[in-house]
Image 1 (tube, rainbow, N blue to C red):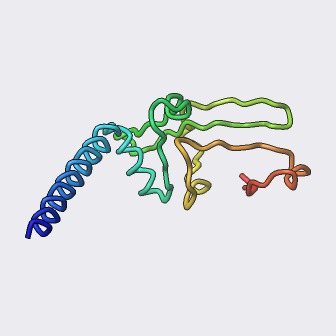
Image 2: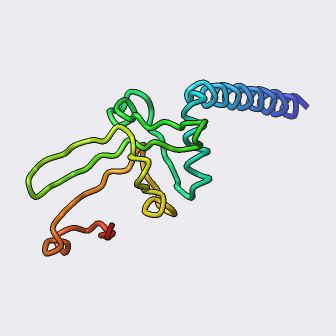
Image 3: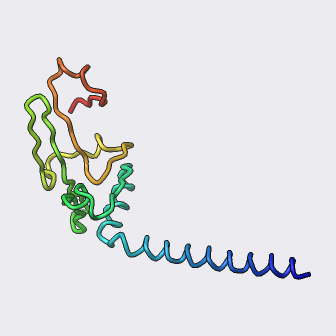
Length: 134
């Protein structure tokens, strides 16, 4: 009989510990992603883009300046441009409204913001990335 009670007590404590752990993790998830980032995630998803956000201390999270403009219902992407042939990288803090990346980002998965690697056509074979003609 004592063995049955001991097993019941153990399961009770284990269940309580699991619920406490899950509640703490849920609270952490809710508090770690600000509303403006949730909006960006949602708007990217509506546009067919799988957006993955990194934790705040990461450099890419800190430098990301992507934002959603409610009035025009437009995502203004932070875009990094890499030119490896000349060892140069530059950043656009938001997109020109006359040009869009939506067709190029649709059905892609990006981390924080897109990084576009620009190389000469003759050197495409040297890169494992899929080349997208813009």
